[in-house]
Amino acid sequence: MNTDLIKLFDSDEAAVREVLAQTLSGADDGELFIEHSQSESLSFDNGRLKGGSFNTDQGFGLRAVAGESVGYAHAGDLSLSALKRAADAVGAVTRGYSGSYAAAPQRTNKKLYGDENPIGEPSFEAKVALLQEIDAYLRGKEPKVRQVSASIAASWQVVDILRADGERMQDIRPMTRLNISVVVGDGDRQESGSYGVGGRRGFGDFIATDSWQRGADDALRQALVNLEAIDAPAGTMDVVLSSGWPGVMLHEAVGHGLEGDFNRKKTSAFAGLMGQTVAAKGVTVVDDGTIESRRGSLTIDDEGTPSAYNVLIEDGKLVGYMQDRQNARLMGMNPTGNGRREGYAHVPMPRMTNTYMLGGDKTPDEIIASVKKGIYAVSFGGGQVDITSGKFVFGCTEAYLIENGKIGAPVKGAMLIGNGPEAMQRITMIGNDMKLDSGMGNCGKAGQWVPVGVGQPHLRMNEMTVGGTQA
Image (tube, rainbow, N blue to C red; front, side, top):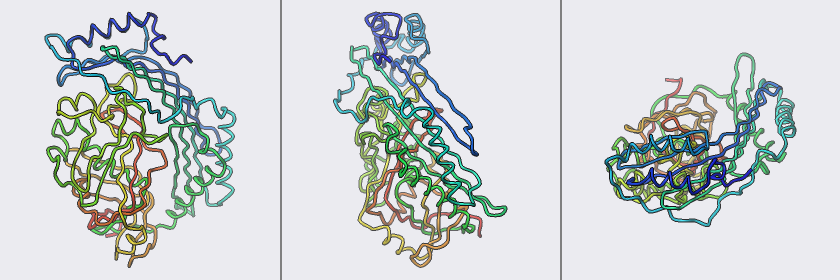
């Protein structure tokens, strides 16, 4: 496929650029975002191929920014007539407005992932065979296995960003993902475990036999642990969070509150706290879109700004927000490479990339040994967060009692309940084992979904509220 997307229009580049320049005359910012995307997914469930899909989509989004107002129109038709209709709608936002068109994003020569389309390799037949093999492997390994679900997905997105000042940026973004879940049972009781891995590269290592078997083994281990779990206690107690995926709590409870739009509108629990202490000493949180081949990474964001290593909280103090171009300008700050959108039909907004907490100086064993009675949360499922208040609720999918500094019985039904800024103040020990998740995160905001990464080291948090099934 031709990755020069402007050539997919039924007109030459000069005519497209003329419409763009006229539309954005008098605007503060804006661009023409052109996208071509392909995606494929296969799911295997209960011993058979349950679903499969292949989609191709392309279109454009035209945006004009005037102060706090945004005009946006999009179409799946790459034609000059569709662009002119979009321009008529978008141009309304600049009528009677006279702005100064912002300087273009800086250029970057860095590429964080390859251009290859991962959908064609391995073949459809090989992918189905892999899913069958995963199913057979798990069923043959443990007689308690009652259900196996496995899925494999890939996507390939090409974006072209044209600005009224003549600047043009392009990015080609691959993505792959493998997910495995298993249900085990004993009598009337059933429990589940899961594993996922992915990133901005071909399937390669993800589907190598030793790799997927390790993942399948981990999903089975988690399910069998949960099958033996006792009811979680409820009350106020110390909590140890494991490294890696538990960083999803940091992402939800703190990360969203550090996005620029919530702070500009003063709807974040962190609004107006720049430079103030918002977390325990030693806590440093960053958003880093520059890690090679990671799920949340971007060579450039969806406005053309190169992604960056952005420090948000440093040694407990709030030092930065994640910004797109509009919110950065309105707040007198610099864009941070966090302007993201789900696709051409969506406006960009400040979004996280890979958000994680840096490591400290304690070993995981030291942290666990320091707790007399508490909960060790190894993995989380879903959670809910209120951005304005910072209140959150997270369910643990794998957790254990800690008794006299030792890991005890597994527990089920444990919920962590708290307030994001408050929880950050309750961190008393930070592990030296910072780890990113395995590449399975998705983030929703205002109806848009984008891929993200999370991570953290082991953490001790004192006197957290734990919801459970034991009084």
